[in-house]
Length: 156
Image 1: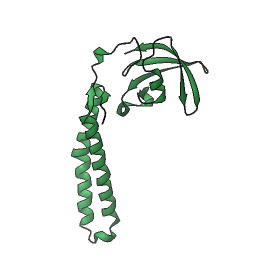
Image 2 (image 1 turned 135 degrees about the vertical axis):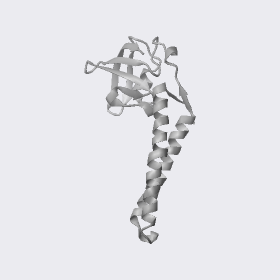
Image 3 (image 1 turned 180 degrees about the vertical axis):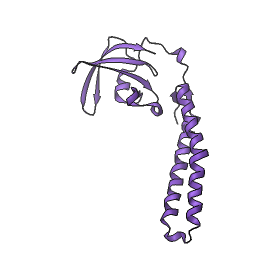
Image 4 (image 1 turned 180 degrees about the horizontal axis):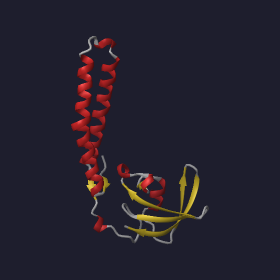
């Protein structure tokens, strides 16, 4: 698995999520399984089947998060420049067709949150912006067509 770059904040949140799943969610599901088992015949016990399935999904999620954590590389924000677009930069762009300004911060996949203006570096827009400089005009193919964007500002 390739390294996952993330902020100190994202790393801490990931560790907190794993802790929550292991110390609260896991015991709760184990309790549900035990309660369902106490109700008798397991061959026709839908509660037991549902709890076992939930347990499997939870364990898979824990394993996935631990894998991400094991491959995480925390980025030192002091080493991030603004000469060209890179991960953790805040980029203000202008859509040349609609004349609409947008500002996005490029983050790791697990930190992406469009409501907060954080887009994953793996998205077409972020990929199209990576390495570009202020004043560059880029054309990015997205599902809805072709976007023409001008980079107005790069900051941290």
